[in-house]
Amino acid sequence: MNPRIDAYAAGLLDGEGCVLLTMGKRSAGPRVDFGMTEKARAVLEAMRDEYGGIVAEGRAATEKWDAVVTWRLHGQEAARFLRRVLPHLMLKREQAQVALAVEELRQQQPKYRGDDRRWTDEGWDEAQRLHRRLKSLNKKGPSRKAAPPPPGATLIARLVDGEWTVPQLDLFSDTHSTLLSTTFPASGMTRGGELFALPMPELPTDAPGSSSLLPTPRTSDTNGAGHHGDGGMDLRTTVSLLPTPRAQNGEERNQTVWERPLDQPQNLGNALARIGASTPPPSPAGSTSSDDPPPPPPSRERTDDPA
Image (cartoon, rainbow, N blue to C red; front, side):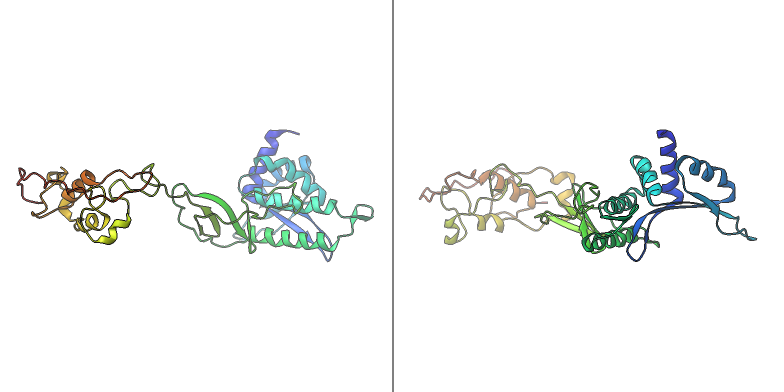
């Protein structure tokens, strides 16, 4: 066996070949077909000499089209060919795996005459399921191009013939294919017949359930807006200080974050500075109520007009 020839044959199959199953009343086996113009006859005959099969005349020449030559492999010859080229396939790898799975399944059926097999009901049902799957993979026509998944999304399974299956088949499993056996991800999405797991959102800080800007909710919030507990502003008061963002917040003159006295107009930068300055760090034991007096009012030295 020559790996270079196998790699060339794999490229030929990806571009010009088709992996099929020959299905009879109670028989099934792999088949590989190639069809190329007359000028490629020498290539197909060289492939026949290497892998077996039959080279025959296909479509006759017309005024518009050249004659077509076919190369076809059946049964065990097709299976041996697919095993050799499988490591090099890119576009038709999954089709080859399905066809090989059917041949492996056929070999597991009881013999009754020569190399003929008597298919069990269970084995035949599985062969028909794999046949439907291969037909779905070989379906022609324009495919709907789905938008790319979000960054960090991981492909888990594809919907093939109404069943969620993992991207690669496992030829050594009992069912000759790998169906999705795990539960759906806690955070995921489907797009274009594919199932993706999405990364779980992370908290902005190391403190569970806390935020770097908003104070931790406390039972004292029920007392109404104001300063409660250990002296900081409660959640209701903090939220009420957040003004509506405006276009000029992005201007260079408004990039300095500083506290403005509460009796003066507040912009978003003032509110963010006040929240960051007065929010106490969350306590592992929770906040405790106290009667400490509120902090002194902020300095009025800055008198710049709000943005």
